Length: 41
Image (cartoon, rainbow, N blue to C red; front, side, top):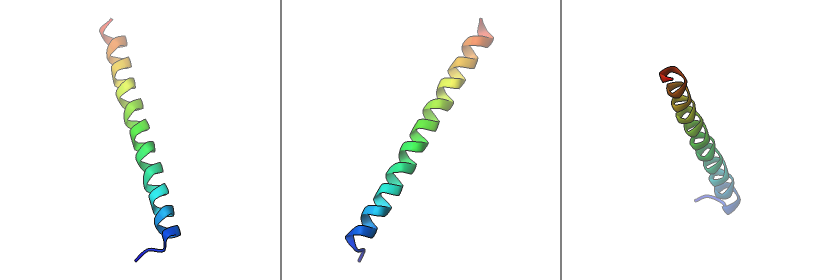
């Protein structure tokens, strides 16, 4: 069993890393779209 503080800490880390990966995926997708737009015009 986790102490509630440890569980909270792990949850925060997991949430942070999830947010980070979501943001970086969005950035990657945006830059792909951006480059497609540049090179096709």
